[in-house]
Length: 321
Ligand code: ASP
Image (cartoon, rainbow, N blue to C red; front, side, top):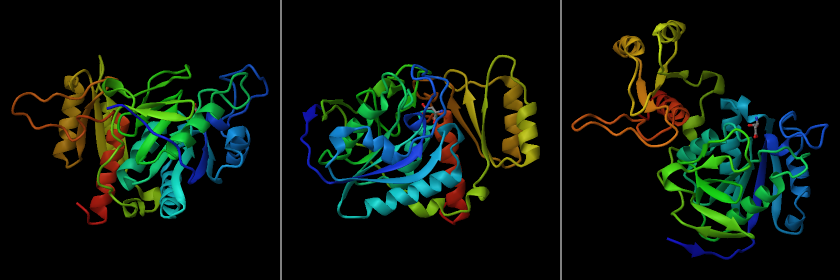
């Protein structure tokens, strides 16, 4: 499907959380030796003159390098997003974020809120002090997506591309077009402030904000273990002994697991621990053998699977399953 949609000007709330988009270096040409999360969301807005005079509001929810993202910040962010979405005057939300864990935050917000309005995560690969910073254009594009009539769900906007929350992956360490939607391709592209859309908006049933109501220090401990040549079971046994509450296995290829690691995982399962299998491959899903039960994480990345299992355990604690 291809469609071109025009703008309308509802209020867009920009929630700041930090990241490279808010990063600064003392050397203007330095794109890697900067410090993330230095500029306020108000400063980021001020660097985008076309947004002046349009109905935007800014709120600083957090100020961190997204490599350090945590449950408390996710809880605060999800609550802030929900609070603003409930305001009739608000057409959409933009969240400024670091690129490193953007896909985890996007996926969490979609699962918890499945919003009927757009929630657009935006980031940058270069700091605000770069000679050719990508943040201002990305922010302008993100607001254009948030203002697109009919937009809904959680998406990410970078380098002129729009990615759905369940598909978006950071796939490059350095390039400004560091994100991909894998096999599906992007949901759309933004061209001179206009969205050209190729796929439907993210949809689904929201788990509900309540699922995050547990004290963030008490969220279930779920770890990811990876299968590889020469893998051993010792790390899994140590995790179980330390009290881990769930495990995600990033298997090789179509979900194969080294026999030594598998043995330890079987022990963990036998002890009652949930163990979910996915693939360490960047693309594709686990394709089950005929008659085999599919893994609950078959179509998820290891980090999505970790969150999915955490949410399931949180929900179970609250009597939800
Ligand atoms: N470490 C940074 C962050 O995730 C990287 C970035 O934003 O590109 O906050």
